[in-house]
Length: 149
Image (cartoon, rainbow, N blue to C red; front, side):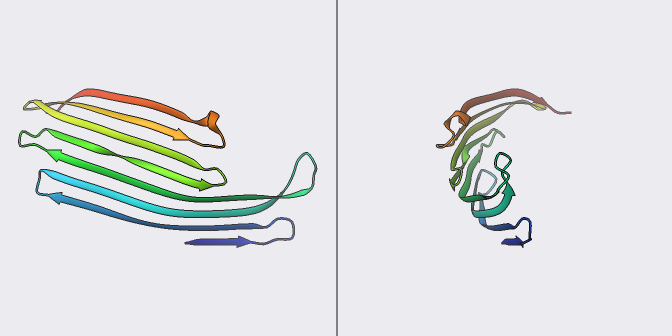
């Protein structure tokens, strides 16, 4: 929790932030793991300013309530190959509501004693209903070869 109040004769500023989160990591031996995280937050700020076009005092108010979550499942095979599947999301409501999604899938496969191939796919999706022109979606694919000594 953060509560910051700075009243003044010329300008006042109020900021109130609340945040709570929880995380869980569960493993079943060396073969399986599950990670989950959740956070809930609320923010309210209010400040006065002088509007440049009228030179009169105005109020700027911003409010946001958000949920953020991440889930990732990891599977490791006996041959040291590994696979992961999961993703993250954020939903925010308030002055400037937004939605963000990021699913992912990755794999790593041993090729030789000191070489491993890997690949990862992620999708990014961001939308703001009020400012739809700022929204975007994108696929990202990464592949490579790791060599160790």
